[in-house]
Image (cartoon, rainbow, N blue to C red):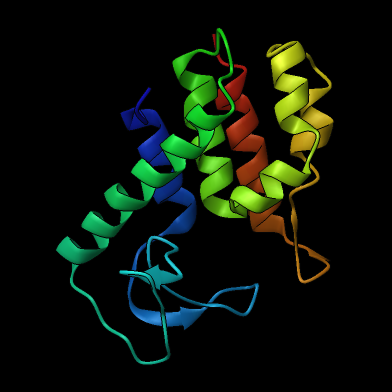
Length: 147
């Protein structure tokens, strides 16, 4: 499965695009649509990219995250669920998803309301609950459960 325009727009909406590196709320140097690495190297202070480079980084990153979602072999998930999962893993990283109960919950029942509780755990950065992450998780869950 590939990320649809709905998933792409969700990620763009919440990541925003900055062409000069900045410190994100988790205190990591970031550029473009939330990228912390470019060509395998960490983003550093003062880096600049073009809009075309930012768009290419996003598409390249999406391919990596799509592969990571495919790794779980979720049977029967729909496009909106896939898109929401890509947005989540794009934001929290593959390790955080792997350490959570979310993959198992989706495997058991991809429509379980209990998925909300596990999904909503990912609203913290450096131990602080961030309103932007609360909004993002809500939007992801709305997309995930959209019929």
